[in-house]
Image (cartoon, rainbow, N blue to C red; front, top):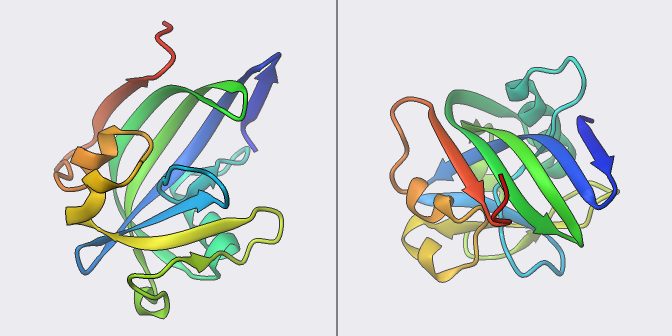
Amino acid sequence: MLKFDQGSARFNFRSVAVVIHDNHVLLHRAVGDPFWALPGGRVEFFENSDATLNRELLEELGVEIVVKRHLWYVENFFEYSNKQYHEIANYFLAQLSEPNQFPMGAVFCGIEEEVDLEFKWCSLTDLSSIELKPTFLQHGLVNLPMETKFIKVNELNVG
């Protein structure tokens, strides 16, 4: 996976799936985290960013996806688990092969053994009432761009 640590800092290269079904977006979080995020994962060496999403969603939920288009290229500086992150991420609009197999209105568990993830469908109208990272998504998910946008997020006030 494309991540590099230097002391208490980490560089991370990630792909992210924006899955919207029936005006709900698919979110996930590590069990115990106070915030939600979009599913995805780290890109592996010599793996295309969109192919990462196929691999990750199969590992995390046992479901195949179709990547529709690139939405955002995001450079993000944040802190998580006592590490400062510099993350580059590609966000893709994607569609699950079988979205109805996952319950609306309830939290459900992922299937990946190495990571304890929980998922839920969140109504697009309820996004402002939950803690969602990165925060640009609360507005961005209800106003998807027609072409790829470059987004800078800096929670560390560096750079």
